[in-house]
Image 1 (spheres, helix red, strand yellow):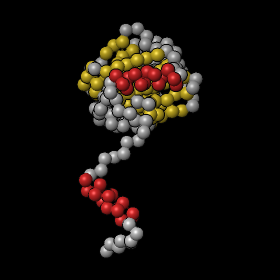
Image 2: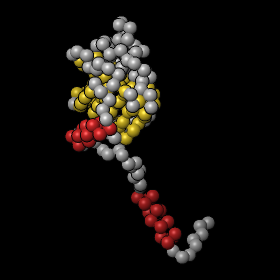
Image 3: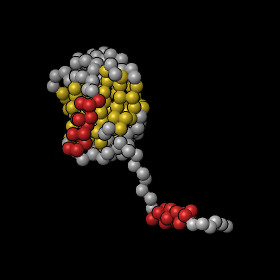
Image 4: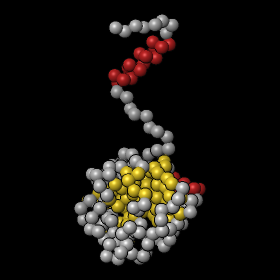
Length: 200
């Protein structure tokens, strides 16, 4: 993994990363940022007139997702300071973002057409010299197609296994303190008895 400091570190990508609006992007990351915009990949370029039409995947606020400006500040990423897989997909079947295999946000319509010919970077918002990623980026995979659910799941499962990421498909019950467990056990005993218990 590469650690990005949230201040000035980013990577330039050689060539054009994506070529059409049918896309799927996978990234294994950690996020240690405070509130604010921060991007994993982006081709935002103000000097080339590609700001509102740029494509990027990142986060905003504390835990919200950004899939370009058209789908921003929505959903919630859990436990973002530990490694997680973010999957962003867009195309004729709509737009969606996943954490591991859990749907974070989805919509039936794709995001509006993007301009993809400006330079690509990893770890900040294009050439804005800002919105830096603060955390690790272990993997970025970009596909010039909106992968089918079956293909997407194969890659998600592979990355989850490779990076030993937690399974978020089922809600995780919060852990209980010893005192809470004792009260819960007492409640079970009382409810299973044939007598009523009165507490002043």
